Length: 364
Image 1 (tube, rainbow, N blue to C red):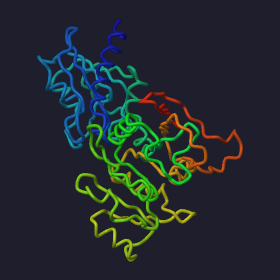
Image 2: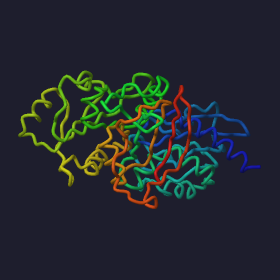
Image 3: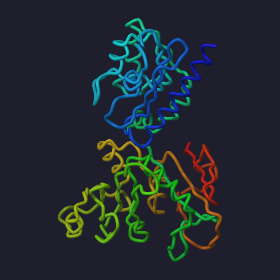
Image 4: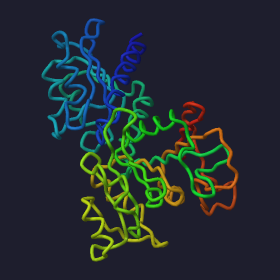
């Protein structure tokens, strides 16, 4: 019976954790519930990056003394000093009797150390309750910690016959209004959004979050030759949506200074074998800026390069019930010559937005 109760309260903690979606990155989403005498006396979640952790908010929100209570938390409590003090200190100070943890924190500053310290202080600890669900909740965080690379999501909208634009390059709008809102939700959930110069030149997107509530991600433009115009929409609201242009050009190039004068940040990255910005080098630079997740919205050259170099983790495909025949494909040549070499996807969700079908998958 106790196991059933543990899973029930952990589900509540997971639901609380999701409230931090889009606001806590690069920190994980965490939820906490405090139970005493069979009653919920406290709830909390990590609300924003740099703010109190879930355990602290639950302790502070408790309706009564938490001594002798059970704390349910989706992720192992931290034991190191970061932007906030260690959570385990407050747990011990408040005399919590039992701590039930969803999953262990893979951050080397924490991993099992919080559990060991709580146990050394006489607190009963149970781990692995709804572990898979808790791990999936923070797949971006765990990937970031385990690999040192950002979690990469590719998103594109296509017709039923696999075209992201007509033969003349027209692509606005293949998908429905409902799918556009879904795209803005994706933007709000990522630390950065990345597109190639071709997308900026052809579609002139703002690359901001407007149709839903949420923060604007860092806008990253891959422009190897610095061909985009200063009149592009991305230069209009630099104060509210930071913009980074990456190029193979150096500061000595006249085009570099032309765009730098607009107030955007430009960085030079060595070219890959094809003479374009090396995306893997770019991603490593973004990691050093605490960018743990990147949403790639195009174009076809960028999408193809990311897939070809095995840099993608997630693929979100919006399929509109339209057929246009000849046109532009989302994915170009991956140098795959046999079905045995095909990239395999694990479909996680199939959604309906307006008349569109959205397939949310992970690359295996």
